Image (tube, rainbow, N blue to C red):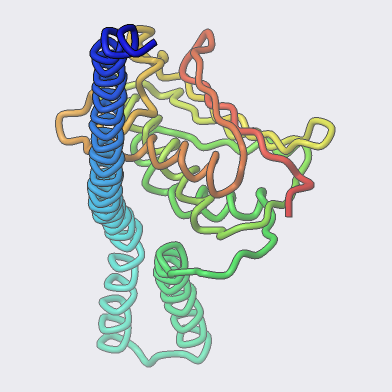
Length: 287
């Protein structure tokens, strides 16, 4: 046994060393893998943080763009009433110069002037309410929220030959921040308006249909502007994707985010025979 022991001892030591070396390599590989995983996790966290910052900046940019559009709408809607008030004042001056002012004339003047000022005030209130920061979620009527946007846009859209038609089959309520929902309608309708650019047609129409199906509330927004090119149809909700020269690629991305994340709904788009079609669905029972 003594001789065999001395003969086998080097072999056993060699095997033990080999085994230890393999363990060492595996530990090194494991440490490298863990370090690489940690590196990847840190990079992912950095990318997510950068994306969130970029997204926040784009959303603020989109708000500025929307505010610019809204101010343009207000300017258009105020132009006619202000012109009318100016004519009223001029007429008052002429009437006073040529003949005594009757009580009936003064009452009529006050009524007409008050009506126009009321319209101007309501227009500004609608604008301020739309951009007012709301933190609390409340139940709100989809029909009323949609009508508020339609009334606000109606005059400026009609001046472009575009009619907004709301078809109310069955109203439903959602719980959330109302002006976030209104942002969805505004973005989709504004996209439809831009699709009519250069068409010079007198029958331009945007239809908003509100209905319910079982436990779901459904909104279908459709235009007759010809539709979205099929090659970009699947890209329109992507961040920063735009086909407009001055577009920021955030509008429809934000639409999808609000619908799916804030209201836990769904949104799909397709082309009908006459134009683009957006279908929004929400769970009526979600509170």
